[in-house]
Length: 200
Image 1 (cartoon, rainbow, N blue to C red):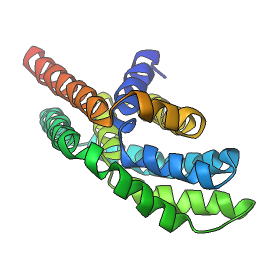
Image 2: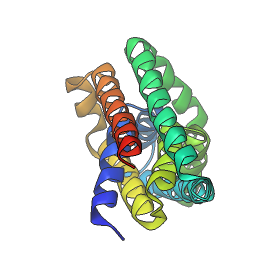
Image 3: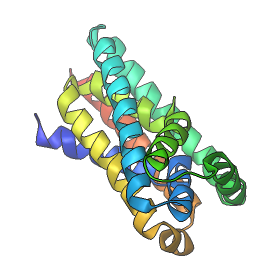
């Protein structure tokens, strides 16, 4: 395990995931149900999604190194473009997203809250940018354990923030600003990947 890769994965996924729809989904669920149960269900969904991304990233890492670096740089660049596009429209769409996740939640109690939270977040996270970036980081660094720990830790931290201080955070920070920050991180990762290619 490489602490630097863990920290890098944590930082990249945390910044990208903070303005994401999964933050809104967790926030909405925690206002309807017991927050601890919501966080457990969300954390389990993130666990499965991160394991899938890490497994796919490990498979990709067997490709030639140049192909992996080009694909990773491309993925980071695409991520930046997606975040920049979403930044322009996300503030306006936030209310619609909240209503959509509230409708999906329905009514549940006890262990059903965990299951409901798991299912809502698993569906929301499938093919998400953070999952694709996790895949790219595993392929780039060929260190699945470190990337897994960093990525899952970041997802747990973001969902914990949503449960505990989600409303306060949204009232103080515009999600579009977080999108721009995430886009900057993706562009930085793309540039670092290209730089590493030129040094090889």
